[in-house]
Amino acid sequence: METKQNPYALGVLAAVVSYILWGVLPIYWKAIGSVPAGEVLAHRIIWSLVFMVIVLLLLGKLKDIIKEIQHVFTDKKQAIRIILAAVVISVNWLVYIFAVESDRVIEASLGYYMNPLFNIFLATIFLKERLKKLEWLSVAIAGVGVLGLVLYYGYFPWAALILATTFSFYGLMKKTVPISAWAGLTIETLIMVPFALIFLFSFESSPSFWDRDVTTMFLLIGAGAVTAVPLLLFAAGTKRISFTLVGFLQYIAPTIMLGLGLFLFDESFSTPQLIAFMMIWLALILFTYSRSKELLLRRKQELQLAAHKK
Image (tube, rainbow, N blue to C red):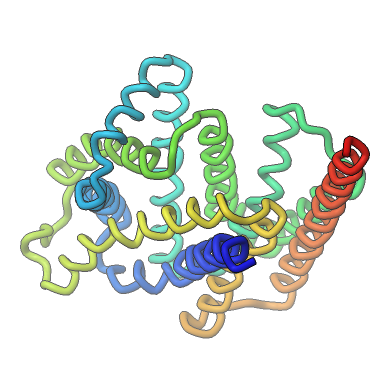
């Protein structure tokens, strides 16, 4: 019994910790808010690659990962998808850092609340998945909530929508490329490192990296670890727990972000915003209920079929 429970418990722990780390990440970006978002992104990409290479060397996995990366590039379609994934996740990181630095943590949290609904939308278009009536209703309710925010803000909540769409497209492209989390993050940062270096050498602000205070330098270097660790924990967790549980846990991060925006960063949150968020929360509850019900029914049918075969 113990051997069966331990992997599941470790999976839950890894997934929960990954979402908590993502949730508190705005505190980290706020700490280096004096550095322009583009520069932070460039350092994040570079130091993520450095971190991954060091960890892979220590674990003795570097040769295996290099072989896995080479295998991906033998297939033209897979190579294009992983390159696009690298570009899309870099855009996501940039907008997220910009949103935090420009006091839009609540708007960023909205983007990650909407992410599962965008996943549905993309799945219906690219993966030809069919939606149930309750799921279509959840999409419609979320759409009304977003429209309400547009009318309230007086402008399109572009940061939230870019975060939601880019992370959804990233997930879709990664779904179509059979590659491990270790190799995935290594190759994505490797692809973007030349552009990050060009940006730093061409557009780095004053003071430069070497002229900044020691704390800021260490925080920029540490951006590699704070990027890689949650992703690796998430990958380890999702392998050991059900997709349904992952669906419930994914709301931890935006909920923490919303709390930070409200109580730590003192961002405004009016009644119209609360109503819009409540509509999006309702949409997520309906969607999660529908998917959970479907998965439980499928599991029940599988167990009945297995019992019948016996």
